[in-house]
Amino acid sequence: MINRFGAGWQLILADLALILFLLTLAALAESLDADKALDGETTRLSLGTEAPVQAVYRAGPEVMPFANWLASQPSDPRVSLTIYARYTPEDEATIWQQTRAMVSAASDYQFRFRVVVTAGTSSDISASLAYDLPSEAQTRVR
Image (cartoon, rainbow, N blue to C red; front, side, top):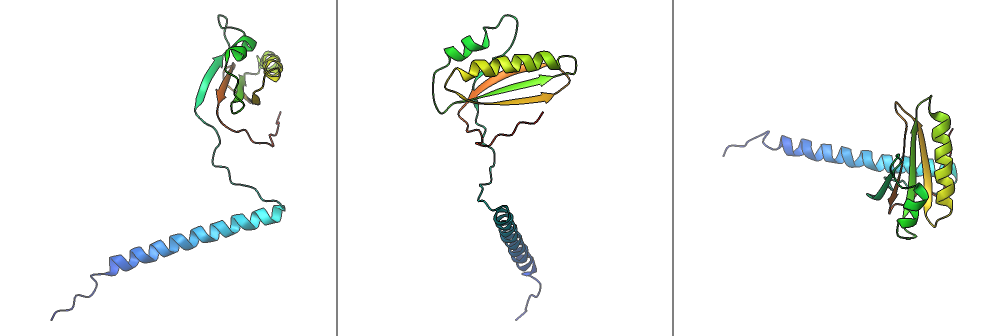
């Protein structure tokens, strides 16, 4: 009878790698729980809450006014509105003014909304409606 030594070393190595992977995941989960306990509150890890867009508005010269576009959308309490504004240093004041006007128009409707304003290489304002849930605690950075 011939014994074949070394034939199963690959299987043993794969098992050890799997065990190491599972131990690493367990340690990571415990460290996340410890961080939450240090904060004094229980929070959920958000893996992205944005859904596919249902309707898009892009400002332009031959486009209907934003308030009219909002009025033409079906009223659904599950829908949230996101206003995206990108500005260049030359257009900063104008874009901020237009963004404030869009926020004012959105306040008249039942949509939950959030505003994302960033500096960019070109100026642009758009809005989208989606069945996503914005975070309850939104922060505003200027």
